[in-house]
Length: 351
Image (cartoon, rainbow, N blue to C red):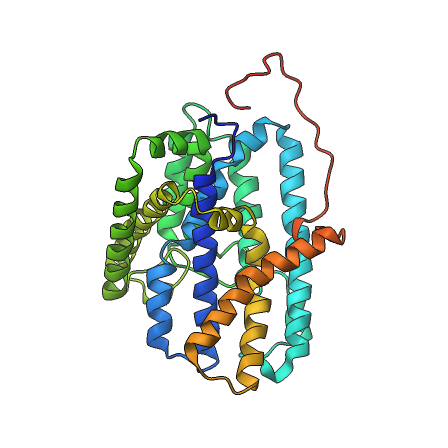
């Protein structure tokens, strides 16, 4: 399979990751609203939250080498950083404004001052400045080139181990446990991931992925292992070590799952549109929960199901409508005409 062709297996893996993120946030919201107890919330956090963001970071990193090689480094960095920052600032204001309008319906109080404290990301939006910082620090090194990958990966591993599970609440202090996954994705690239998956028979990938996911979920819950981005306050060296091993195992299992479920077009669509879902799902799922509770609906299965549908399908519908109305910049940020590098060899291996 050509490395120049987008591999749907990676889209499926990222699609599974974004659906898992929605599940985690829906359950956290229901716990804050008093609908489910903390035991259910922690079980979902540890079993599903163990791998969703690490897969997100790794798969996103794999696409970077090819994207950079198609452009100049400066053009790629300018485009990515400006887009991510613009989207982050826009959604910070949008989400904060909606929370202010919601008033007492929210699980947490919100002030207008807090809305504009952009150095303290609101909820899940921290992932965007994390991507900006990780990009400007690691991408210019070009760790996918020979003899650069190992030392950069070691550096990423050290950063992740030191701050595994830590969330300081400020830009630059969140998501540091994911650095090693992001760097590993950049170092590996899509072609190597595709090649590794090609060597695994699909039935084997299906069985192993399910077995490993179940095993890691059970162990993580039973040992109260520390997740890459959460539970720092419970951290011990043993729990961190278990969390690291389990996160690596579960993340690899999701890649195998993507290999086995490559024909599931809905998951592939969610993977391609994962940022759309990531940005909008909190507003839509939380809004759905608030409306259902105000209507007196108390069937948990119905609340969870409708919140998940709103978070996933609602996000896809809203982002599609925005693009049709020429409001795609709400999800994509400002666009640029990117200069391409003039090559003497059109078939360069990195293109």
